[in-house]
View 1 (tube, rainbow, N blue to C red):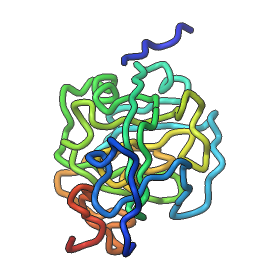
View 2 (cartoon, one colour; view 1 turned 180 degrees about the horizontal axis):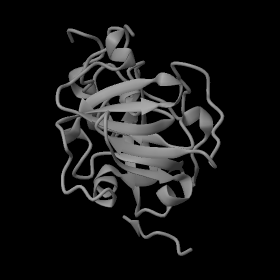
View 3 (cartoon, one colour; view 1 turned 180 degrees about the vertical axis):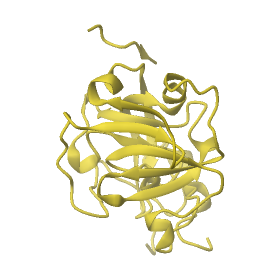
Length: 206
């Protein structure tokens, strides 16, 4: 099978020159990739792995691991920001954009205004569809040219780099389109419904 096409605390910590406008308020830069998860790391069975789009009642599309990896692939380099205050610059990812997933499902546009992401272990997180389309987000399967490690969400995680990183849900299995915004796991436990790093929307009420 041919490879799919690739398209292109109290005292502030010092930031490297030229990065000030890339690091949101309250964040500090890291060179490693911290591991933070809401639960244990699941063991992926790629033979039974499926990823789907639905509205909670009817499926729009579903892909096996092989089918998913045959979809158009996109590579991006982005900065990421965790609500626990670390930021990592120039991270490199590869995966399938939400735009390409909608197109592969035969959808000219998203069927509803919001999405609930569902993952292994029951983890969920919510966001507006507008924050996923027009090249803003992908389901990523590779990091730094290597398959995504399980501890970082492999085999596939949502990547929404302009929001706090808890929105980039690990071990993603389906996106459910919903007409009204609803809280996911961390949102029900006091985190902000949206999570804009530049507005420091860490917790409910920020």
